[in-house]
Amino acid sequence: MEEEIIRKALQMGADYCDIRISRASGTSLELKDEQVQKAIFGESEGAGIRVLYGGAWGFYSTHELEEVSLMKALETAFKLAKSISSIGERKAGMADVPTVSDTAIWAPKKDPRNIDMGDKHELLRDVVSAAREKEGIKTVSAGYADKTVYQRFLNSDGSDVRTEVTRTYIRSSVVAKDGDRISSLVVSAGGTGGFEVFDQTGQNPIENAREGAESAIRLLHAGKSPSGKMPVISDPDLTGVFAHEALGHATEADLVLAGDSCLEGKIGEYVGSEVVTIIDDPTRANVYGSFPYDDEGVKARKKVLVEKGVLKTYLLSRETAYKLGMEPNGSARAESIAYRPLVRMSNTFIDNGDHSFEELVEDIKLGIYAKGSRGGQVDTGKGTFQFSAQEAFLIENGEITKPLKDVSFGGRTLEILKSIDAVGNDFRFGHPGSCGKGQWVPVSDGGPHIRIKEANVGGA
Image (cartoon, rainbow, N blue to C red):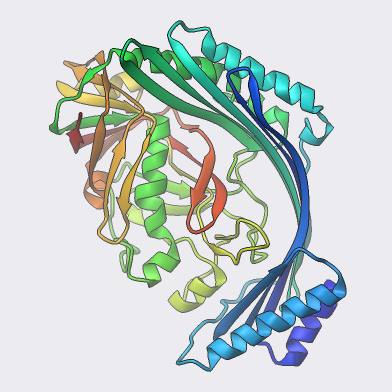
């Protein structure tokens, strides 16, 4: 049936057509303290059909997989493409990639589909209990989700790719209170796979909740941050957020083509110091943002975005690669069959260096040690950013001293990249999550501790 859709599209005059057939199932569970807020199991299926005609795209999705529904979806997508192609000059096209016929089933070792809802509930209760061990914790919220997605991708080039990926995820949020002082902190754990992902270092949700509670308690009596230009050491969580937000988004080729990237025209140039290597790698085993093929049927691959300070490539879909005269690298992703693929990151990180944490700290007379992220602002076009740390500490004369709250740091992305003078040897992925760009996809980021010689630091 899917093959017939492709044949029909070409008979109608389409230059290109692809179809994604998807079947998904998953569980979602939420607790606030000991009370269940949500417990849902759901299944869905559907198809997304994309047509290229006369340099213009048409896209339509349906949750009905009967032949008549798929044909109607194709006809609608084709009509959209044809009508748009008649309005002005259109330049959409597809860079060539090898034709692929493959099946990639990433079977979980501890399949969440075989684990009773009661056991998932018990795990969340253990997460809540671990956080509440600390005196002063006012409220704990915890959420669990697993999802298994089977997808078949076919296109008019002859590719036929079947994939199945399971992701499992737990997030906890703690609120601490002492009199009129209130603080909060969020942690998460998860990856591609089943319950075995929680056996990985740094991904134990119970330990993460306990550590999150300790940090929230510490923040209650943390001091104000100094302000001004000073050295900053970021922990692996914040290093990853910087790699993802400040650099990663600027390498997305659709933003480059739109003139909204500070990295436009800079391939082959130094954009950071020689100790900085930044990678986007969807092939990492068990990591939350990993996948075997992107949503254009292109095999996932490791991309070295910045190598020893030099910008090497962008993140590319087939269309953006066509427009830039580059080779696609498997970076087209969609939230579901209801969305068309966009250029997206996967697991983005700064690669390991050779310094111990002690070596990073010892030469700093006055600086900041920043951990985690509460969010921030990034302007990829201007190349500026500002992040707020979840937790921070003052560094005085080579020693980490008092805790600080409400710490933010920022600057110009390329200046900060060139200001990184030392990279730690303690790489790990940070907390997994989702990245929004009109649609949401699972991602991870990380790195080792890094030292920035000078950044703009602000406090409350």
